[in-house]
Image (cartoon, rainbow, N blue to C red; front, side):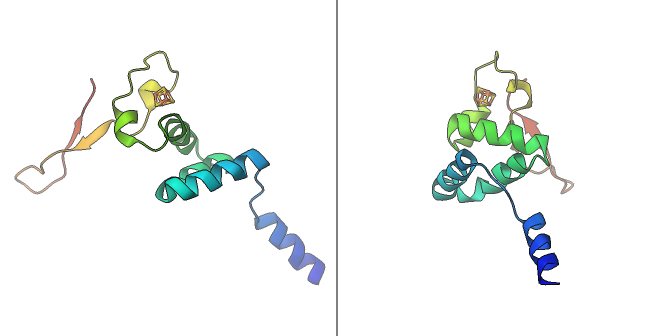
Length: 102
Ligand code: SF4
């Protein structure tokens, strides 16, 4: 019975490589609020998080730098995060999103 419990725990436990663990530690120290993007990317459960994590790594957490990225040759450029900025809500109370780069 206890062996089964151990197996359950090992199945639910994240398994990261040494390089991934090092990156998680660095992100945890510098940008803890962005850590989950890396965890989801390393688990392979979210392509969106993988793109976000790559851009975060590229600009080391600087969202403005990602938004204003000019590396149009980068395969991720069109899909990079933080391109939309919040603008003033319209008079009817809804949320309006504006695109910074078109
Ligand atoms: S889109 Fe820009 S910020 Fe994202 S990985 Fe490419 S070069 Fe870096």
